Image 1 (cartoon, helix red, strand yellow):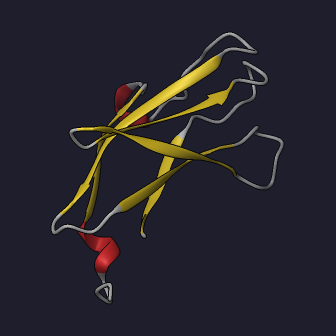
Image 2: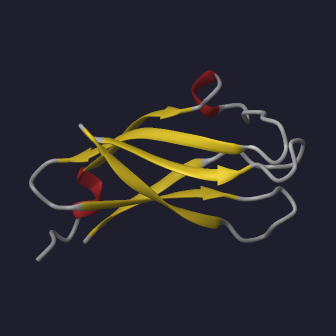
Image 3: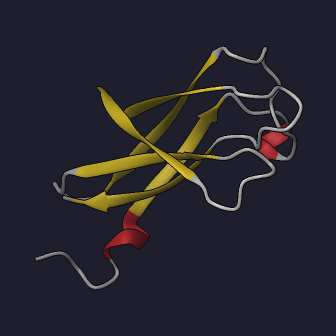
Length: 98
């Protein structure tokens, strides 16, 4: 059984790529895949799952891409840059207990 406030125990840091601590959107060539990595961990032995959010600035809904654990608390996810000028920067949204 997961704790009532279990999600507060999850730490997400070292998100890359980023510019100035995430204050500015990254820019890539349209049509290229963008690899996003982050260090994601929690205390205890719970299994984690992570999703990467991205959206075009004209979209109302966020799109989700699952992230994969690469070992040593590093996770990665990939999405394709659709329009260089109008794509919002990627964001690691949350971790779920499995």
